[in-house]
Image 1 (cartoon, helix red, strand yellow):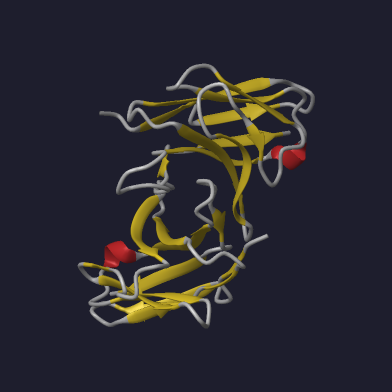
Image 2 (cartoon, each protein chain N blue to C red):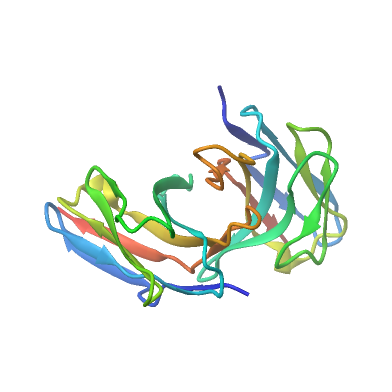
Length: 115
Length: 114
């Protein structure tokens, strides 16, 4: 049981390049999330998916797109990277109900640098 | 919209002593959930403790306990018998219950001195 996995762990991009961050969970969770973490800002929600086939914007969605490929996988795409998107990105998942409702499980994060 | 405030950016405690981390929140919801997450230097986010607002009893997990004051909208974390491995960033988080989104505070960096 790997929990939540993310690839890659590190990435350096040039301004204008595109890339996709991959996330997968093996806990059969319905809900998945993408956050960014910046110094002094805590974690801010970019997009989330309450269930397979649905996605919604979070607090800071501009410059990003997401795809909920299936119940396990939720990817985050940067179409044209900007230096302001330099950050650490976390994927998380949670159950839709049960005793651990709303408890989010996090992946190890991706450190992205945009030059 | 809900807000979560952690007003202390940094704290330091001697090993084996007790430390309390503060968190306040603002919401109009009556039923909600509160969490403390730990982020050690490895960067992994780890759930420390959770509290359901409808429960009057404060949650406890081994050396970690909370002081939940619903009327004051305060949710502090007490760490007893601090250990070097407790050195980390700690985030307070709020969930309104209607959906599963979390709102995080900005975090506090805790250093445990040997």
